[in-house]
Length: 322
Image (cartoon, rainbow, N blue to C red):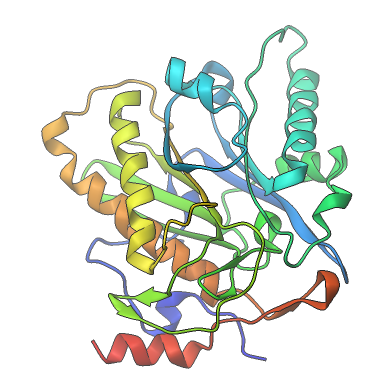
């Protein structure tokens, strides 16, 4: 059993921009992450909560849909109004509706005047390693993820909503990364669960495909740059593009979504200056996706299925052979 290690600890560096102190979405000021993990013989699932300061007042946001084969609760209102008004939660496919309900309960308990809320909850299908039909997520799991949200480095790999996911033929899960640019920072967190041929720094790494149900990816991008919803939509699309850099085949049954938001509600960024933020998004998403793999452990789950962690030596060899 190899020890989970982040990509940079394996000597592999994505891109040229500097990372934040934690190389995580929580490097963006005002962004916290909390997670609840369920790991038993036949259940491997959980909740990942991205909690930005100021969400109750509304934060500029946008959604990009690479392929809409998914259940992204709340996305149409984000599209229509260009803002989020709740934390963003991730979970397993058939639990998404229970998570949304529990999120609303958590919110109205904190705001006695709330009469309309738009919970934003995304998902990927973790049925290969988890008995998804049991829909095991309870309000207590959701509230624990929200209440535990912190600015620490989020757990990666087999944690939270990534406990039972697979990607590119290997065990995957949650991954995160960040970049700094002249006027601020950009960070990403991903829930990896998609098919394709694992590619590291442009070099394919063949693997025996995992015969998993569902192929999807949720990407959440945060920044403190003063971007408006239109500009955040452009960032979100670059996040979906970044899936190709690690070998996604964008399968027919893949629900590929990116949500981008800023903690800075005062727009004032010029389009001509977006080149660096675009680069920051593609680099941070690419590295987050690879971290979701290198930080995962081999997992045996529902119906005796096993998803194997990617051998770290394959990652090292691929980067050294460029």
